[in-house]
Length: 338
Image 1 (cartoon, helix red, strand yellow):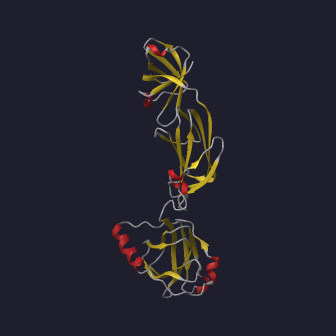
Image 2 (cartoon, helix red, strand yellow; image 1 turned 180 degrees about the vertical axis):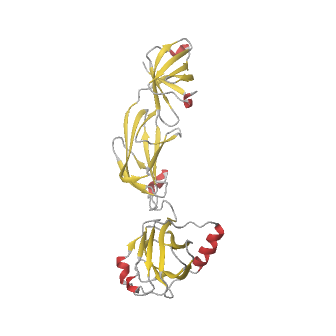
Image 3 (cartoon, one colour; image 1 turned 30 degrees about the vertical axis):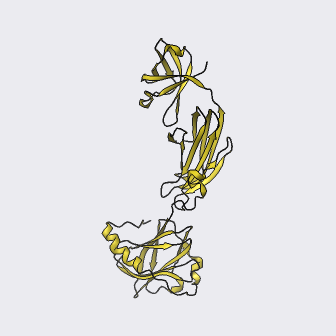
């Protein structure tokens, strides 16, 4: 299918679109044409090809419609697929009885034209009519840009309206880039130190729906489906579920599971590492012994679990089940209590 709305330069856009927008006219009420009741919905951002002969009867002209859910800008794209064509574009309101835009247009072959209209929520119908006995072979498309990208998100489009998460109780929702419902916020309030297991799932054939976690210390990381976050003290964890691409949207489920935190008292800094082995700087007062377990929490929220392989007076050798990375240098290492 042909994608429209692409003009080569800003000057080209102004030359083509501004005269059309300036000619917006409101016309007196008419009788609703019966064919609007069978108008074919236009898929957002895609084009429909229309082939009309010079003898096409007005009662058989194919009407198209698009539903917009909030105030914003409706863009109608036109492109002639063959020779230059003269046609009339007629756009009617939700009842189909009144034209909100009507203009005779001459399209050069293969040269797209965009028409922008400021509209309120509702259903809009559009039809192309051939003029001067010409045949028309053209593509018509429509897309909608909400005035407020999150107009339909509700109170949870910002942190101040975040939904409360309770451990082991799933929250379900949906976000959509196209429908003006792009963001949902959640919060989890930890009253004490704990370990948080986070489960994020997309449902209902969702596409491109993402989620991020923001820790009480301000670190953020994208949720991968099954994540673990260690909270060493009380605080609020924030979650943002979002659709940030033109074709993204769908349902999701977010669940948190809380468990007691096995606290830590001693700390050490990683000095160097080699694959699954690392050297940790320790003080004699730390009382580190072989077999002592611990963990590192990286800036992205992931954890590296390890065990002390050899304990020395000023440093210890740690062995990890996962691979140490460059980002682990100089990060604080936590040891579990004996």
